[in-house]
Length: 70
Image (cartoon, rainbow, N blue to C red; front, side):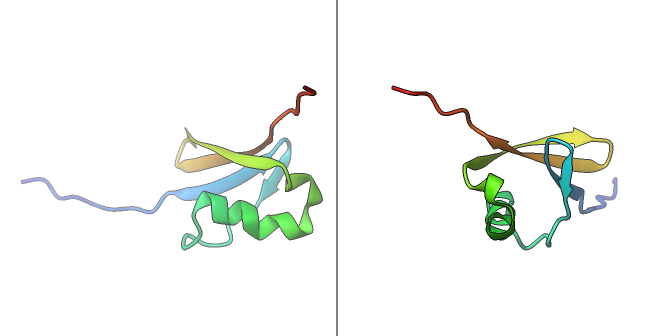
């Protein structure tokens, strides 16, 4: 019988070249975005994409959607 070992993946949050520290695993990715919005106004229109696995890190990206005139 094989043994199951559970590990917690490290998370990283990015927007372009900016990396935001993970405020804690008790926050889901949308809550992390809300956590940073008051201090980073450019996150106001952002959404969370991902995760993408890079080695042992789960990378979430904050993306601002382009607005279209209509």
